[in-house]
Each structure stands twice: as structure tokens, then as C-alpha cells.
Amino acid sequence: DVYKTQVHDGGDGGFDDDVGEARRVVLADGVGAVQHELDMQAVVLEQDGLGQNGVAVEADELGGVGKPGLAEAGIRLCNAAGANAVGIAEFVIGRVLEERKHFRELARRQTAHDWSPIYGTQLAGSTVGLIGFGAINTAVAERLRAFDVTLLVTRRSARAGDRIDGIDEVFPSARLHDMLTRCDTVIAAVPEGADTTGLMDAAAFAAMPTGSFFVNVGRGSLVDEAALLDALSSGHLRGAALDVTRTEPLPVDDPLWQAPNLLLSFHCSASPSAMFANLYRLVVDNVGRWLAGDQLRNEV
Image (cartoon, rainbow, N blue to C red; front, side, top):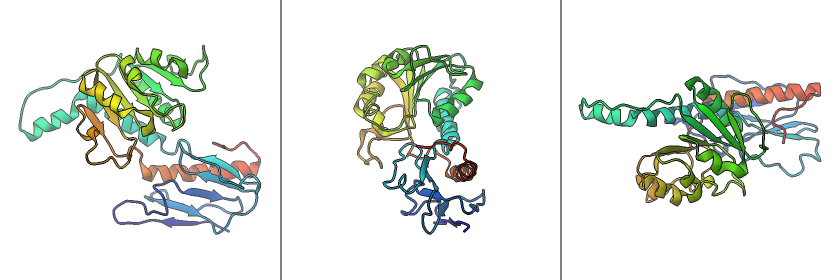
């Protein structure tokens, strides 16, 4: 009754189609223990069949969807929110510093043997706005506090007067543009939904101060890409960083490839080796909570 742990070794560090880019459903029913080695690069936790009264953890932290019949079978569904958060937050901090400190231009000048100093700007004292405050932007905020910035947050559930420890001001989603007007840097990490699709449109980018910087590590559907291109081409935004786009893979002739001052990555801001260890810990913790009759983490 111990679940099998299978390691995928594709030779190139990738995942096979069955794993579905780390969005496999991980199942545990409480009658055994999950065996795991923390140094594995990729893990799939499987069981031969669903027992009754079990715990299911769905591994897509932003897009978890309930499976028909689980509730009737006594199975409680949890998502894996937070499994990727730290790795993505580190990536965001790296992008923010890369842009401010001109790391790419410094590398170019090194390659050209060009001793021409170029100076970056200080992050401390600036204002950073966070769109969404789930696991990812919570982790981003924790790391940004060390840089002595002013932190603003807008979130769907916020109400007037809400406060969050360590955050200077919280805005309801209806006041997104009010927050944007105050931000030197804006970092978006929200799930896809009817209320987030196209949220960062021409009006939103226009609300951001001239010379500000935009980062998106949530879902590509958030951004009106034509509006972003206009904001970059006009110089209204000094730059942007996208880890996600509306169409993935991005077509080779898409204008985003050539957009000025755009840092593109390819939906790879997470750290998969750490994610699977984090996912394992979540499964073990939730199985223990279920056996003890305690509240489960991330239950949906």
C-alpha cells in the first residue's frame, strides 16, 4: 500500500507528455506513505486506483479544476498553490534587478571589449505595485521588503480599508488604475479568468507613470499585447518582462520578439526540481491533516 514514485529521466531535463508539464494530478488516499527522494529532478506520484475517502492534490497551482465524481466518492480536492512560488519570486527579483542595473548591456560591452561605464538606478525608495496577492506575489513581497521599497497591492478580494502585514497600501480591484499611477514597477501574478483577461490594456498601461517597468509571471491572457507593444515602442514604458504570452509557444513572426526593451522568457520562471519537493511536502502534510481530521491546506 505504499505509492510508487517514478522518476522521469528524458536526458534533456524535460517532461514527457504524460506528465503534462508538471500539471499531473497527484493522488494519495491515506492508507500508505509516499516515498520520495528530495534530489529528484522530476517526480510523478501515482497509485493504482482511487480508494474511498481520499485526498487529491492537483498540481497546477493557478488552473486547478475539480474532477466530476470526487465529492461523491468522498475525495477532497486540493490545489498545489505555492509549490512554484519561491522559484518564480526569485526569477521576478532577478528580472527587476537585471533591468535596473543594465546587466544585459554590461554583458554586451564585455563581449565587445568596450570599457564604457553604464550606471543603473537604485531599487530602494521606489514604489512597486503587485497585481494579485496569491502565493507568488506574497513571496515576491517578502523578498522585496529587503530592498526598502514601498509595496502596494491590488487584489480581487480586497475591500476599502483592508490592511496586509508588510504592505503599505491595499487597493480593491476596481481601483487598479489608482494603484498603477503610483508605481515605478508593476508585477502581475494572477490566474486566468473573465475578470483578468485583458486587464492590462491600453488604459492600464497609460495609467502607469512614464518610464515605469512591467512584469507578468501569471497568465498571458492578462495582457493586451498590442497595447504593451505600443507602450514600449512609444517609450511610455521603459521596459517589460514577460514569462507568459497569450499564445505559447510564441510564433516566430510575433512582434513581441522584436519589441524594444522587452525581456522575454518562455514560461520557465519556476524551478521544477524544487517544485516537486514542495509538492511532496504538501501531499505528506495534507495526508497527515486528513488522518487527524484537521483542515486541509489549499482545499478547493
